[in-house]
Length: 124
Image (cartoon, rainbow, N blue to C red; front, side, top):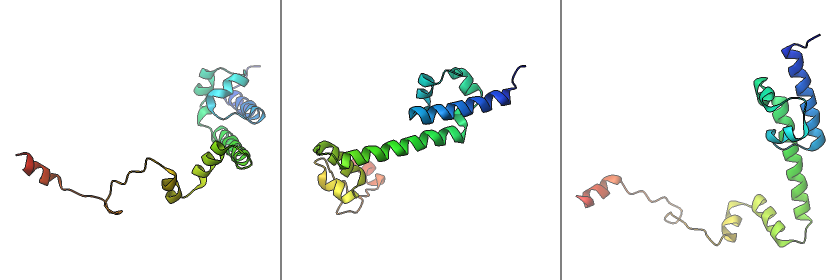
């Protein structure tokens, strides 16, 4: 007996969610490297790319992976990794202090506001 479109969509969703969790999928494109139950066009035609369940599963994997990496970076003796982590978690002032490229395009924190009409008079 042929399955309905709704049944297929539910089956694909369930199997894709299992694949996302099993293989720590971090983006939609990577699903197809591990899941062979449907092709890309079927995935998009069924609107599976718009399902919150699939988006949330991928987002959960990203959060877990980021957290894991930050933990590894914090425990590392590698200065480059430690600096990368610091840049992610530091305040804007601390980031500016680290930067050798900081250029302040303001006047002591105040924005410079030159009316365009002043420029036009000089050009005439």
